[in-house]
Image (tube, rainbow, N blue to C red; front, side):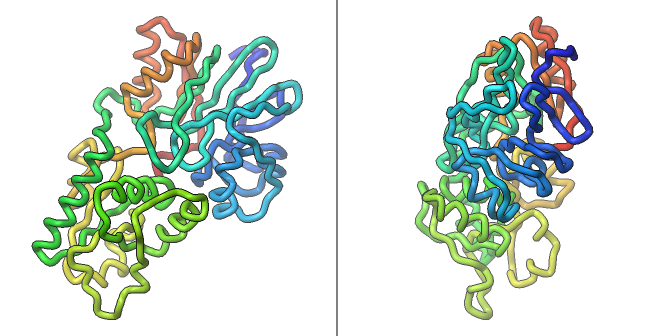
Length: 331
């Protein structure tokens, strides 16, 4: 680290001295620039929030009314001595990378991102920079994602197999981003409605109000008394597994949609009947591709498998290091 770094690590989070703001801080600060609405990146207690206009519905759902300052993707605005703009990250609705220009340097903090197509959010935009701060959630060579359209067809096939056995197909997935993406992809291969746990239904409605097209849905709570859901696809948060809520399904199989399902051991340890590989984070090839496409001469990795990325980049002659941050995984 040097005195002219545009982003430094403080106890509150990633701090930009030139602009006097924090990026996705994990402790209360006066001014925060938020990359997206997941709970490990958007927290309450900030004096003011800068975010994309497209991400406002999620922030209001998660944080309520706050002092929001909204910006369109690519629109430059001034914070202190820094010229800042927000660019699509392809992670969830309204997600953004933070471009910072000051003192003759350009830094980009990516937040969470992916390169796979996603009908529920704007696609990732490569932003050239001198220094790139990248996530590393799935920063190991083993993580390589299949085509999501193929995964959607596999889910429909699984539901049909469950129907033949008189079982409900309960698919666990994260309630913000993953569930909506699955419903958008499923809407392209089936017209049979999905049933939703209440925690998922709330987020789906936020996306619908934002104009995102998805498969038709109904809530489990609104089903007729005595429904056994045989042959139905049910989307629920991971916390539903093993809970009393599951007792309403007389017979069921439980699947999990996550990048963690790339490793069979994860499915076996959690006792899931099926694992479907779909992630809202970049896999290893896309992490490496993205870093190179930015042209960055220095890379800082955050949250995840940072050691493998640092080692690979150093071997390629790119200076790389890590920030130890307060961010989590896909949840």
